[in-house]
Image: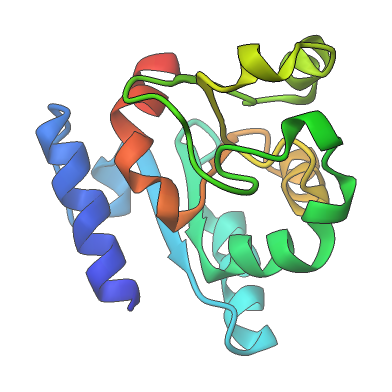
Length: 159
């Protein structure tokens, strides 16, 4: 699955005007398509993060993110935000992509449901794993579910 998902990510970013490089040293942005079948796979990612140059931007996706999403994240999502990539689907073809950080999410918590129908939430702003890793690796700028690959052009534009 990771090979197929990685190919989708690569194709989407190439269509957005990015170039692909094989060597991490040549990259400006590094995307890890993670696995969480075993704890050792997750440990490899956290170990790999230590080796990345702190000037390079890091983004994570894959089962490690979704595993944490299922187990820790959904119960903490306020009822009026249970839409978009939390639960369900966006109700518009051109959603506003929000939720890159807690401050942004705080601002929209009080919005009416109708206002939320045109939004897609990314980065798991409620996800404790993102905040835990971001404390150590401030260049870790994005968590996104593999299901949200279709929103990458909007995410890239926002970032």
